[in-house]
Amino acid sequence: MSGRSVRASSGWSIHAALLICAAIVLVPVIWTVAAGFRTQISLLMGEVTFSPVLFNFHEVLFSKTSEFLVNYRNSIIVGVASTLLCVGAATLAAFSLNRTRWRRWVVQVFLAWTLIFHMIPPVALASAWFTMLRSVGLENSFTGLILAHATLNLPMAIWLMSVFVREVPKELEEAALMDGATTPVLLWNVVLPVIAPGLAATSVLTFVFSWNEFAVSLALTMKQTATVPVAIAKFAQEFEIQYTQMAASAGLAMLPALIVMLFAQRYIVKGLTQGAVK
Image 1 (cartoon, rainbow, N blue to C red):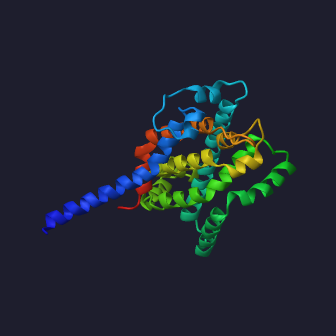
Image 2: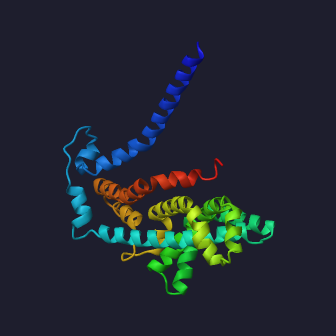
Image 3: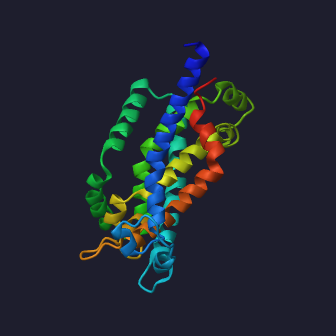
């Protein structure tokens, strides 16, 4: 077999593997979205062909008993606010760890602790956080939930931002300092423009993780502050599981992440690959 044939065969194998991986990811998503356009009877009977209906989306969005739009608003508020807080704190932490004179072991211990904290299941922290927030009057509040989400995503954000800050040429910072720039000016006018793609990538990932977080949101919220994942879980009731309405709400829940990924795709790819090739 010639080298050209081997390369062609290898190319087909790679494409086939990619198609299989894409199918594994996309088929459940497509099935879920399609289930939102089916009746409960059609879904439970396993019919292959069906006539699409909009009843489930109407019930989820506009029925008198549904509060899904309120839950949607809650998730947007918590997601945006926790992302701003988390990424802001992570950027300052990354700059401090990489540009100030910390002892090396201090930086290593700090990063190791963030990694260990990130490995703790969120549900293990929920009860302790609920008790802490109740003691300061922040139970069932956006403030408490925003702080919890920011805390959960902070380790990941610190690790990502540390990589991006580390890649900023020190010559740029030294030149700014020689021109008399203070640390805030240096950070705002020199560092942030350079790490903008990484900042965008970290922000998108943080927002998506906040949007999808369930265990802590379930423990820290009630009817007025419940988020989208908590609202979706309520379709599984004691005597009935409203599969089609759950599927419709899950399809609607995908929209913010898809929109953010669509508009920020270029920055995400550039940010996540920054530093891989010099």
